[in-house]
Length: 407
Image (cartoon, rainbow, N blue to C red; front, side, top):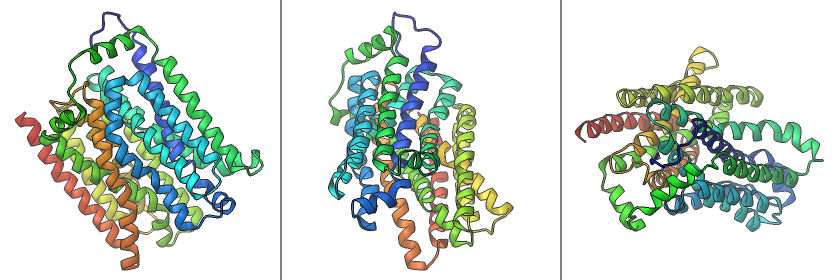
């Protein structure tokens, strides 16, 4: 945090962390909100499955294009105003989805998320890096990173079991509810972070000399650690998104029923939430690279074990996947914002750059695993590819450690 003359209360940073976590939960809620409604939406709007697949993936395209400009906007406006703007854009995405009349209007609603989402995902590490230090910084990052999982679980668990029956099977009302919650989350953020110390800290940051966006990006890309972290982000998101999207089908291909696959697929999500609360707090600068390397090794082993029959080996693989899935990303972002030459001042732009690159892996992961399945008739090749990617992440961690020691 900058050193404002107005002394903030000890509770301010934890209030802000709650606000950030809530916004990130809305982020996950909005991403997952369409999935349980695919059947009634495709029926009512007369969409093909190919069109619906395009709708579900369009936000990642706009996200990739918008992440860097949104990160720069975050650094210029400050987190207080920018995060609220991000929440409003995400809510607008939800409202446009709810009034969609055809493929194009639904596509527009989902694409809007790609403009607001990067502000939230880049703003969260910026707030944490500015207001938390030492072990508390890792712990705070571990807390906020659980938000998307909690939001996704809320959407997946309540949409068809509670909300659709309560709203007379009207999917539009469900989407309006999720959009309204995003507005509520934005207002709570404003109230939680409202303090003179917050505004003065951002004024001090804004008053300093600031290079142009292209100069800033060029400066960040000249840092070897930043370039390596961007490549690692692609691998991390390819592993996470590939398995997140295909895990239930992978388990069904190995003989499980749809219900059994659904239950088993929740294991990595629950383990990931628990792990993200503990592992980043342990990742002090002295142990950070060792822990990231162990997480990459866990990801490699997990991919090999996911073809096992239901039992201890499969459960071990799912647990290892859960341990790696959120914590790898958390530690990569933590290392990024603490890289010399980045710091609090450029955390928004650097995080936007990271997510812009990482979502290339996020978008391609499910596609590549699907293509390999079609080519080989199974998931063995795809899981082998994910294990190889995890081993490359292990090698990247070793290189990051060398760069940190030389700095």
